[in-house]
Length: 366
Length: 157
Image 1: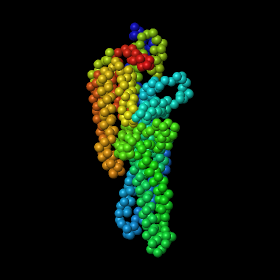
Image 2 (image 1 turned 180 degrees about the vertical axis):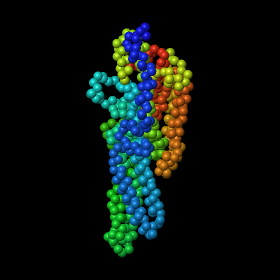
Image 3 (image 1 turned 45 degrees about the vertical axis):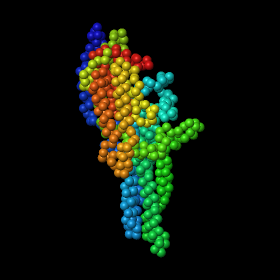
Image 4 (image 1 turned 90 degrees about the vertical axis):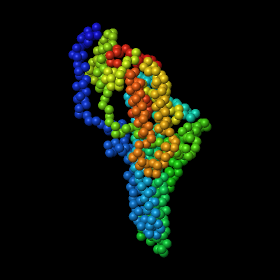
């Protein structure tokens, strides 16, 4: 009876499915070379060195940051250090050198490391989540449904998990979607234009090292340049003559004076955040400070001990990158499953023969 | 009811993908990686509850070990800080070592427990550590009615 069905539909179309899948798949696979996952990454990021280095699309003012640091440090080593070595100690360029190396390396690591980007949901995952959410207005696809949230209790605190419409996932706690990079980032702190990247779970410790070492470096250069000018002007020449004989010092003084306050302030702020196990995002929104009037709110992620908080944020284990930039895009398994789907409608009973014909025609055409 | 497969190769060649079941993360302990041990109804007829729970609990233990903040992680963290984190480029971190152990464990579980029952676990790292994806396979030779009933039962929930 089933065979008779096949002959009534179209023996030509039926004879072709089984032999066609292998030749059908070959023309699709032949010209396509294996691509790495970074080449098909959906977020707004740029990749270098075949996926080893990741930066945000807009590099922000990273070149300015690098330029300022290199210029000021260069001028310091060239113009101030010789004088200070002669009159004080040769430790000065050594300390300056160590601080400079710390600053540059941690800056590059902050900029080029994956901050903790969450890959977007696969289509099957997204469909599974859709099934679990009750959508009463399921028919209207143009109307955007109200924000979906899920509540979870963490450490006796109710935390709302929001659904991300771009990534099609329920965001884990402390995760936020960065609109500049178009990615969900775990433990999202902020998007820093000075480093040209988001600061999140994986590169927060690099960022903290960068700002702390930069504040030490700017304070150190400021102190050394002041000492240099003071020593020069002590020789009876006066400050103006000292500045004339070493004009680079004037430039360094100006740059360091303006940056030391802001960098020191930022370091102090982030030290407070680390000790309280908070992110900039949470602090700005006041998620745990009880601004909404709720007295019972406290940070559920804090260990209630400053030392333990510091250790967990800065010395905790380094999580892996979840986006697997250098992996290869898998060859489609869907090509192999489609011939099986052609067989399944034919195996059904013969009541909806017309529907079977339509399904069959569509699957042959795809 | 559950078709007997001999090994993973046979599973991939002679079976068709019927459904995918997702085990979501459990955030009640905070942001640590932990998966829900609730037994999904779609696997009711495919695998014993205890075997499934054992697998998820063992995976949770491995992830807890990877993310544990203790003596070794402090030493690693302090050493990394002193070398301006350049040490991460040279050595394999403890997390990466545990991830390798996890993928070996999942491979072993697939071969011994899940493939003979027509199931396949995907390593959570390939799904961004968001879900444990369990692929449910149906034997190609069987009629489509069993896969049809599983889809109707899941939509009827």
